[in-house]
Image (cartoon, rainbow, N blue to C red):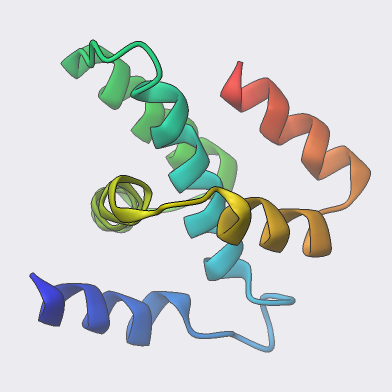
Length: 108
């Protein structure tokens, strides 16, 4: 599993100068926050996860395989995280006001 995560980071998360400031890292942070919301009621349903993945795919224009990879990685990151700051700090630093509003809408 660790090798898969490292490979995903190498291929998808490392900064891409053409995609703006760490676009893939921002995607991971957004997805991790969505997984935190998904787990908030301690009653996760498969249809909730499917909807989460649909929102990620739509928001970031990802392929199905990229969406699944991002979702799996974000799920692991969120589950192992001791603080939301690593996600919210990245978003706060790089998202515009409009992007932050969109994220809150996704979280809702």
